[in-house]
Amino acid sequence: MTQTYTYMARTDQFIQKTNAFMDRTEMRMQKQEATLKSLENQVGQISQVLKSRPLGGFPSDTEVAKGATHEQCKAISTRSGKVLKTNKGNPLLPTPRQPVTQIALPW
Image 1: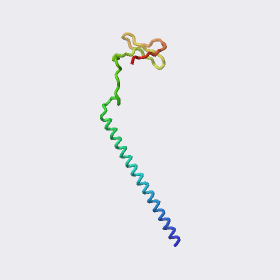
Image 2: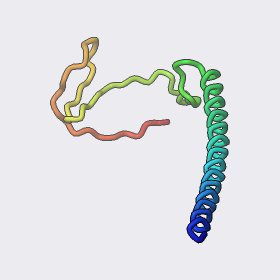
Image 3: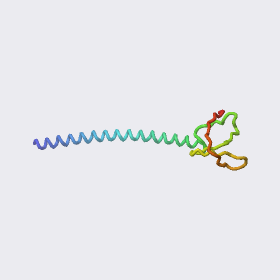
């Protein structure tokens, strides 16, 4: 009789632990479902924003420099320090290496 009682007690404990595990698993599944729905909504919102944005454009507005609509580059310096200048009508030609000074631009 004690052997049967021990078996029944162990079986009862197993069933209780299994039920508790199933309850926790079900709770986790519900939380995951809620998280998944939230993510789906966010992805939908992002896709709507991307659809309304013009193709090839930047996500923010750019500003045009005030009063300076015809700027030109007069010299180019490379990483190695070689300075290239434009010569009247000629393409960029290398010039002797000279120290480059920084100038403040008006904008």
